[in-house]
Image (cartoon, rainbow, N blue to C red; front, side, top):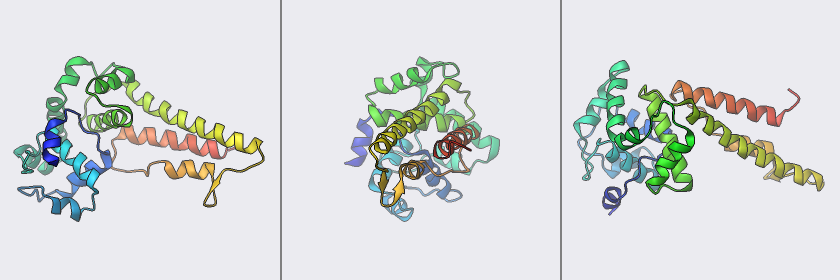
Length: 223
């Protein structure tokens, strides 16, 4: 049933990129003939993660609908360095061909990228996740991407921080401090911030450091 749902959807991958990387790294040197449920369970993936991972693998033609691995998956996992980037570049361009046909990803805006995924019926958070995954895998594949894409990701986080700040100020004016299980609102915001992953592409790591610095300034404005 799950595989029929995967075949029916036309959505590009929207799995968390750290989850995607963890799966591929676990296959290093030992790609099974079939990626069955026992593999995902051993790695501790949830049901939702399994579905989105399988949908991504199928999207890139790395597995077939019966979960058997393709030659592409073997080539990608076994390749190293520049050769791996070259293979990944080809896989990404083939899978996202409609996107590359409609947009010049070197100069397009974040609104155009979001609009493309929305045209595929990706709504709300799913649309954001589609964009995030494409930016991550495109960067890793060495594809030249518009700087406007990454500015959108940063400004989106800024809006969330500003909203949190406004809510906290309202509580302060009322003579209350926003706390949950003993934590201040600043600590809660930091708790929601994603853990740093050194395997991220350089562009993603740079955005992470910039946003984390802004969060620290928000908590300690005098520093």
